[in-house]
Length: 167
Length: 185
Image (cartoon, rainbow over all chains, first blue to last red; front, top):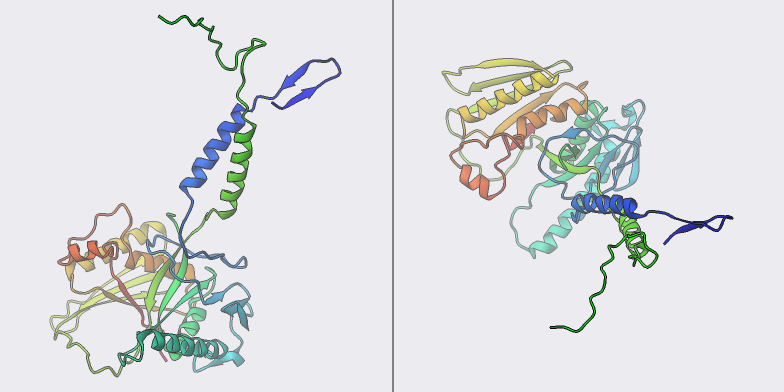
């Protein structure tokens, strides 16, 4: 038992039972909220996700991350934002060109992987899906340009990453 | 009868000098380690997704024939308001327009309107969204929530394929397909 000895020769013992109670409650709470979800993702520290009531959980790690200052694709910085806007030099046909270039590469890799999985089956490939993690304060213009770049690279389904109100 | 001497029972935590004490230090050690591990690995934010599509042109030959008279729902998002337009593609078109603000009370009304439209024509599960460039992303997600998802405490809709939706775990969708109409070249 923990004790503190004084000069007087008396021994003071610390009552650890309340501490044990607190630990028990904490462990119970943490075990209840413990997630065994196989997809684990750390949200970019430089962005805040919008809240949502969606009941659909994240199923793949986001490929496109748009924080307050930059756009990253697979953790590689491709565009620097100026006050939440893309520089006109980076825009072509309404889309963000560097994003389009990166997404084309991802689409090629996905297509090759899908062909291997299909084993040479000539069936039509499923249109591409991609997950976007974006700061809640950005304008739709930025999302539209990203989606345009995506659709030009044959991604037609976009999964917008959100913070669920009910975990 | 037993010949054993009966021992005097001393309650634990007694103040007598011979009172036995449970050594709880190992418990505290285990709990400390468990706490540390769980706090590090705990997910305090649940991550979800809201799925949307963009219009695309397909050269696929197996295009289903659309019914001659179909129902369409269009949602226009502006900086200040949400406008819902519903109409039939052929006469009588029965065009209806309603506007809502982004505040919580109006969003609830907008959600109720979407429920009414979904139950009015159960065959239609698609909404086309047109957003202005200046609308904030958080407002877009707020509107998409009201369009796509039934809240946890809301009753599920009595749709013709309700049983199938329940089996596939998709009965919480209000309008499953949302197309971002403004994302087009």
